Image 1: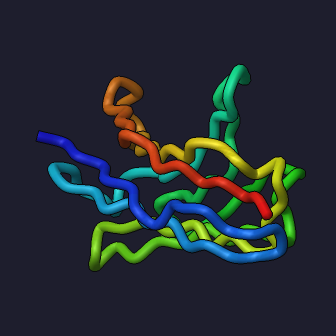
Image 2: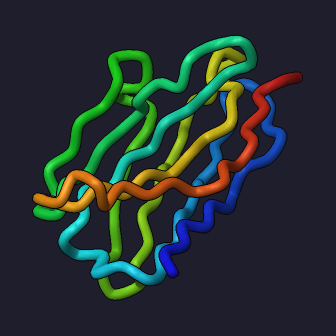
Length: 118
């Protein structure tokens, strides 16, 4: 059974930092591209960052220079380091795993809430 379990969310003041983790099980982690999405209340889910199986990264313009995605294949875990947080970063953050070549092997975590507020 495939599981993606996010952790690390919480309440932080503007300008603060959080590190999200997503631990994967039931998949061969190293052959999956990994994604972080977020969804604010009343809005569509949006891509935040991506890291390929080879380690290449991409970011949404809104988080470039503030967020860093990384992965540890030995721990089957992907991370999202979030710095200089803004109130508009408030959302539920979801981890997503997509297999390199089998499109139906696409899995989601349950999400973790990030709230940026003073």
